[in-house]
Image (tube, rainbow, N blue to C red; front, side):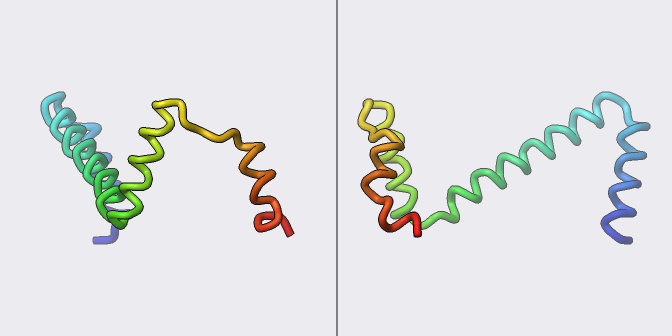
Length: 80
């Protein structure tokens, strides 16, 4: 059975299902979505994760550089 056929069949099952089944399917899909979000983070190299966490901490502490200042400083490498 193709994926398109399965999707069509699943939609029909959901349309005919009672609330309990719809809630179970919804929970299952939500859990899978959250797993995918976690997988993206976990697939990042440790060094990249640390850099992101450090940047978030600095941002919360008010340590930041305005975009215009960064662009001015690195313009020679970014714009050709």
